[in-house]
Each structure stands twice: as C-alpha cells, then as structure tokens.
Image (cartoon, rainbow, N blue to C red; front, side, top):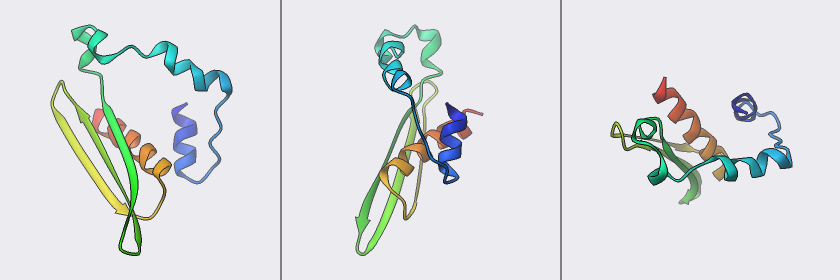
Length: 96
C-alpha cells in the first residue's frame, strides 16, 4: 500500500481495490481502545488545501500523543488529496 502512495506522490495513478477500501474500517480500533503499549505507535495526520489571494496553498499537520510530537509543513500548489498524502509521508519520515 505504501508503495502505491509513494508512486502517487511521483505522479503515477493511485488505484485501490474495493476490498482494500473497506478493509481499514474492520481493522482499525479506536485510539481509546488501544492497549497503552500500542498508543506510542499511533500518529494522527491531516492535510488540506486552501486559497490565499490568487494562490492555492496546502498545509499538513502530524501529531502524536505518546511521545508528544507536533510537526507542520506548508507550500504553494496542489490539492487536498496531495496534502493528505504529504501528511502521511511526513509522519513516516518522523517515525523513522
């Protein structure tokens, strides 16, 4: 899955099968239901795009509660989907 996301960042098509689209709902537990030992591996991400004057800008945020980490990034151009994937990539870079 990560390979396909990284390909999309490089301009290749991103396609997900219907089975993969519904799979995360079944597998992802709520944060407050996680054991304490797994909360340290939980990262929250968000990305969006907005218009400033005549320019389109994207902004991303990545945060973790245990340990407390907050990172943001912002640039000009692109769409909401791009910003969401950039947020994921930023979280992966920080986690390394």
